[in-house]
Structure formats: C-alpha cells, structure tokens
Amino acid sequence: MNRSKGQRTDYYDAIIIGAGFSGLYMLYRLRNLGLSVRVLEKGSEVGGTWFWSKYPGLRCDCESIHYCYTFSEQLYKEWSWSMRYPEQVEILAYLNFVADQLKLRQDIQLHSEVTNADYNKKSKRWSVLLNDGQKFDSKYLITGTGGLSVSATNIPNIKGLSTFTGKWYHTGAWPMEKVDFKNKRVGVIGTGSSGVQIIPEIAKEAKQLFVFQRTPQYVIPARNHLLNSESIKNIKDHFEDFLKEKESAFSGIPRNRSLKSALEDSPEERNKVYERLWEIGGASRFLVESYNDLLINPLSNQTAAEFVKKKILEIVKDSKVAEKLLPNYYIGAKRIIQGIDYYETYNRANVSLIDIKNNPIVEIVEDGIVTSEGKIELDLLVFATGYDGITGSLFKIDIHGKEGLSLKEKWLDGGAVKTYLGLCAPGFPNMFMITGPQSPSVSINVPSAIEQHVDWITDCIEYMEKNNIALIEANEEAASDWVQHCNEIVEKTLYPKVDSWFTGANIEGKPRSFLLYIGGLPNYRAKCLDVAKKEYEGFTFIREKSFTNHQ
Ligand code: NA7
Image 1 (cartoon, rainbow, N blue to C red):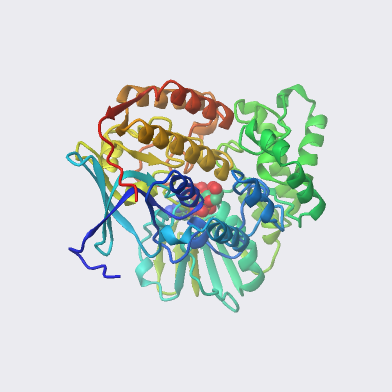
Image 2: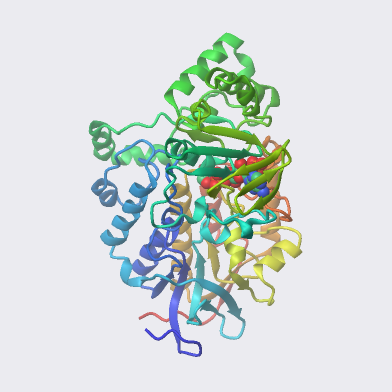
C-alpha cells in the first residue's frame, strides 16, 4: 500500500484507535451494526498494553475467569484459562484468539500510529492522520487507547540518562527479544505493580540487583495457582448465573464484600480476618472482603496497614532493610499491589534496596547511578516508573474539537479534565472514549468496564443511525455536573489523600485531579442506561441527514 503524504483519504463510518480489549470489542459491535469500521493500531500485533508490556513476571492482578470478555457465551466457553492470575503471554494469546474467532483482523490496520484527529465543522466529520501521512475521514471517532498505554510511559527526566552506556528499558515498552540479566548488575527504578512483579524475576537471574525505591509499597501475596478444570467447567455450565453475579458486582468481579467496620472487631478478631485473607491471596480481596471502611476511615485503614507492616517485618530478615520497606500512606488509597515473593526477594544476597527518598538519585552516569551516598555501578537499567495514566494516551494524539482547541488545551490549560460520564467531552462531537477519564475504568475489572462502555456506545450510535442523527455532543452543564458528582464521591474517601497515578501526581506538572468514577459499576451502568432511556439526557443531537457511509 502506498502510504506517502498527499495520497487519497479513506472514508469510514467509524475509526477506532487501538486494538486492545476496547478496540477489538468495539470493532465487533459496530461491524455488526453494518457500519464500515477501521481500527488503527500502532503495534505490530493486536493486544494493546498486553502486547507492549511483556517484561518477565508480568501478569494480571484480576482473576483470569473475570479478566476476559463475557458478551458471548460461545466465546467464553471456547477459551480456558490456565491460572488464577494469567501471565501476559496467555492474555496476549487470548486476545489473538478473539481476533481470529470473530474474524476481526481484516478491519485492523497494524503499524498505524495516529498522530492527529481534527473535527471538521463543515463536513461534521473527523479527519484522522497517521504518522506516515495516511489520512482517514469518519463520522465517528472512538478512542480505545487505554488507561496505561505505551504512548504514555513515564520515563523520569533524570540527568545523564543519555550518557549511560548499558542498555535500558521501560517495563511498559519491553522488547520482543529476551533481555538477558545473567552475570549483570541490574538497577530497577520504581516499586509499583510493575516493579513488584519484575524485581523477583530479575533477582533470580542477575549477578546483582539494585532496587531504587522512592515509596515503599503494601504488597499482598497473589497466591497464584493453576485452575482446576472442574471449577472452570462449573462456571461454563452455569454461565447465566455467573453473568448475573458479575452484573451486580461493584467492580465487575463478585466478592464477599464485608459489611462491617474494622473498628467493630477486637484486635484479635481483626488479625484473624486479615490473616485469612493474606493466606487466600489477592490484593482487592484483602481490601474489600476484610472490612467495609478501609478506604473511608483512617483508623480502620491503619489496622490493615499495621497488619501488612507486621508481615514485612516478619518476612524480611535484615531489620534495616525491612524498615526501609515499611510504607507510610493509607493502604489501598493508591492501587493496591499483589506480588509473588516480593518481600522474600530482599532476603537474597544478590539484592540491595536503595532508599532514594532519603538518598536521592543525583545523576545517571555512563556506568551507573550516582545517589547522594555514592555511585552504584550498573550494566543494565530498568525503569518500572509507570505511566501518565488515564489521560496520557489521549494527550499523545493531537485531537482538536469543534472550537479548534485540542483536548489537551481544553483540559490542561482550561484547568480541569471535563467529560460527561467519562464517555464524551463537550466540544468534541461524535467522539467517544472507551474507559475515558471520570469513568470507572481502571478502578474496576477493566474488561467489565470496557464491555459496558462499548455496549453503551453501540446503542447510542445505533440510535443515531436509526434516527438520522448527524451529531451528538455532551453538554457543558451535564459534564460539569458529572465531574462534580465524581468529585463528591471521591472526597468521602482516602484516595485524594495519597499521591498516585489516579490523581496525576506521578507526572511532573500534571494538574491534580482524581480521574476515576469510583461509585461502582452497577451504579455507573444504571446512570448510563438512564441517560440513554431519557433520549440521551445531557447530550445535544443535531438531527439532519446522516453522514454515514455504509458500504
Ligand atoms: P506505578 O504504579 O505508577 O509505579 C511507578 C513506580 O515508579 C513507583 O514506585 C514510583 O514511585 C516510581 N517512580 C516514578 N517516577 C519516579 C522517579 N522520577 N524517580 C524514582 N521513582 C519513580 O506504575 P506501574 O507500571 O508499576 O503500575 C501501573 C499499573 O499497571 C498498576 O497500577 C496496575 O494497574 C498495572 P512513587 O510511588 O511515585 O514515589
């Protein structure tokens, strides 16, 4: 295909950006509506973040039986997960299986990085541009760019990185080929979910591993295990019941959520509760099946935090190292982490923990990292420093709405991210964001969030097509009310009291605001359905000739 500048424009009803969980399902639904659809994907394979991020130890922290699509009983039954928490390789294989089963590949264009999307007021359509100059034109623009995207990896601006002569990698953009840690002195910067997963794996292989830790973390054991085929068969045999349970679940994953405050139990009873969940494993179970107020009441939160700190002191043999690993923030108020042998790894002779809060990194030099305490020589460096989450991938594309302003200008210079339901933004007609900011997104089981968004967007587009509606746009007032509603919910919790990528605090200069709706999926779904039932209350339609281009 000739992809030089100035070539013809390709016309579609809908352009979807990204071929991860969101883009694949969106394509399937819109194609079934009879629309012409093109998915534009930067990677050389489908999979989104599960394609790009493939570092050793990477696995999902939601249970596999839930971390998948449930819209098709047949699809669900044709796939069987091997483990409680699946490895990246298995998730990527699953997404490829979905692409094949649903015959999606013919409408997905790989190696296609979208750089610009401009709304054209005259044609009432979107112009989409790739980095190689290829142009597209569509009525609908749908972003499936994900909350944690390769395009928004956070590589800290540390003096001297370009002088480092060894290889360095970011966990979110891992190379295809195996990285060899054998006989190497390796540095890992960052101890979030990615750091916690990769650190034990590198430690098994490297000559010496130096962990550069800014903030110690609460890490709950995953207790991963193979799934037994009987339990999977049972779910498949009772699929309707399984779906019903999922639908009423706060996070899309059914849990025995506790109805009790931590302060109602004696310290002995509490210890038993926490101990039981520690043994069962799984971070979100630990949080929600113990007590109902850990994320609301600081005193209740402290009881869980103290339990984990006691565990750290028990597991880590060198008391000085254990002290450095003790966290000092509200447990769960930034994404709670689960790991496999994380704290145990610090008992290995080849692992050293560097506390960079107290001994900051001064610079990176050609053969290592200099902290305020001296130089550590390194052959290889890993940045496990996370992402510009939730909005970062949207800002990487230069998206201009009807006023000519970009999303970035409107949201950053305008002082606040402003969406209606996390689905649409005022000023950006016919643009839908799958798991956009101010929606449940990464605060719940992400495939559940995606399926709900895709279903709602599909219904909305179907409604527009049937009623010959050219445009839909979120109203400013409805968006302001939605943002206020999101903020009111979160203000009652401990989330805003802790710096995290949920609040934008991890990115230098990013304005602070809590970017998720945390009222739970059932409430959110009910609100979205209610809006649709009221003929898309809070949106404005322009009823004139449809501009779709059915093929
Ligand atoms: P996270 O959770 O954002 O963690 C990033 C880590 O990197 C965290 O420990 C940060 O410390 C650290 N960091 C970030 N910037 C720096 C600088 N400049 N210097 C030193 N250390 C730094 O990202 P992950 O990739 O681990 O996980 C993202 C999500 O992926 C996760 O929540 C799961 O949903 C899957 P900090 O805590 O900011 O002090």
